Length: 87
Image (cartoon, rainbow, N blue to C red; front, side, top):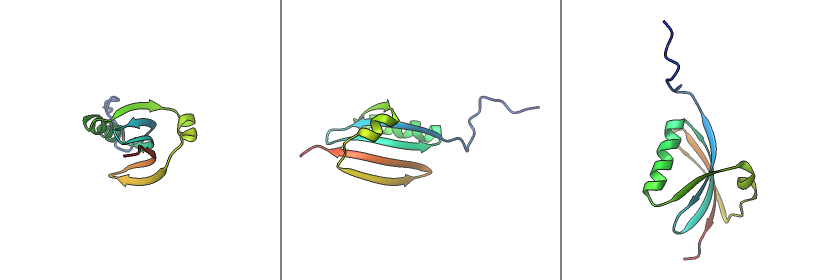
């Protein structure tokens, strides 16, 4: 008997670009990870008051930014280009 096809592979990796606005910064994130981890990250951002929208690689490449960081969090890699608002 074969396994059900609707189960998510534990090694599956999804990639996306997200445009994120918060009260003090505007960021574009280039993220990759397991789909459940990405969903969890997006829900956490929304719960913390961020506006989140999926965007494209073209928008990521032309985004003007003040700071770029690379972080790794529990098998989730993010490259963040951030523009900080003057406080």
